Image (tube, rainbow, N blue to C red):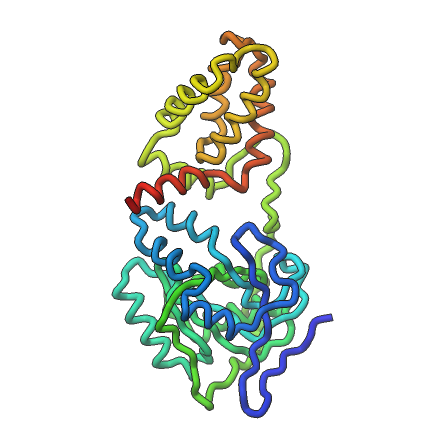
Length: 339
């Protein structure tokens, strides 16, 4: 059973606990929940390495690198406590929602943040702070107690309070949406005694949310490996700096030097798997990895293995290492960028 919100106690806003996660791939999080004011304190202080990590993100020259660095930041689910990070495993619904506003200009960010602070009380905002990269986040309090109506509430907040704000991120409508921790020593906390929660009444004019075809778990099947659009976009960003072909040519020389007997019976299968995993972690497209490994180990090479067997091994390795796709190339480019 869901626990109801307690909005007021001695005329003070009581914030519910929420789940906190180590990074974007963590789905279990803090089972008992963490106080929201404690999380806001971390954002203000920059403790636990947040200051350094957020500074690195904001100083990055590459958009794709910013995106990848954010993935390893801790995050919280503002909409409640979850036993597992998906909508079906909500344990306790919170009394807050985090709104996200994305910009492409630092000056616009500063101006918009001040506007939100200026109108914080009529907008029901408890806190306002800078996003890890290019935006502003605002924590709004509300009185909805039914999580199944969360989408309706989110859409009417957009409709009623931010109708002409194109920077409003509508992806935040998901009940289990995570919010990356940030660093903002000038975070705004609303101390106005007149602050009241947004009063929710179901809006019949808002259509139901679209049906989801894929859960958070990222299980894309175990047949022939296929890239997600995010992986393809990430690789495109990599190619602008160093092509897959150039990277693989360099790696092959290193592989062969370390194991000159790679093509001999007894070495071949393990070597293919090792190289495929490295290619995946370096963000090389699956088909490019297959092309390289067939050239090294296929039927027309000294190794003489069946080409389809090689494809099957590479596909299996890419499935298993998918969560780390591109991580090593991101680390290298981050190091190069900060030298």
